[in-house]
Image (cartoon, rainbow, N blue to C red; front, top):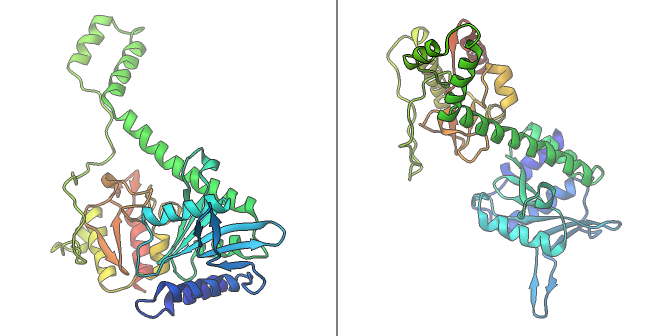
Length: 348
């Protein structure tokens, strides 16, 4: 973990305001040398000019290579003041990967994004397999160091890591598709047909039909969701936060209780960067709060569903997050004790 924390210091914490791309590129080279790669030994090629056709040339920012295997992966550097979630940057990286015939590419700017050739996933374009914020003691950061240290670098390990990430995304997409399918009117009809078939041995068909004429059978989500279709991204850097509630905290319904107390934690800067990162993980949120979705999600996160998160965003450490709205307080599913235990830890 110390190595990752050092990379955070080099690539984020110790950077001057408005760092230029040229200076940041030098910092990125320094970071990879910390991972064992050597510019002196030509393992890091900086802006190497590559002939493209009769008259054109390209110069990727960095090419990492070995004497035995040649080019291993491309690194494109963008100054930290830019948001690297940009299709132009992705397209540029994809082009360089294709021309240099490497299957792995990295964008480094205000965060790190890892891309793999789409052929591994039957896609035509490169695929984002991971995104890593510059937060100390980050598990993702530790994984990055393990994968990209020169002594540990192995293409197979990266492909395995990518498959794990893609599988997670597939499970999320399959969950959404199945839920939508089951909630459709077509499936309500199938349920009625099934029930009628089950009852035919015990009741007359005419009686069954008459009963279902006065009944309504449908599948609904477990909780009522307030419509949020009117949400629009704020156009300025000022974001609304949740209102303060006048009711005593102990008597607030679980949803209002979470919003009010989390709002207090944010306003008092009681949640550190590492916890913010953990709150974006589904496994951590399930273990900590017994909820089925990550506590926090960015709008571009694969976990983000508008109906699963409250519409008013929070600004935390310059980033915009939405808070999960899926909280229950019934005997069979009571999330309050889990949340209160976590809340006590945050206030210590």
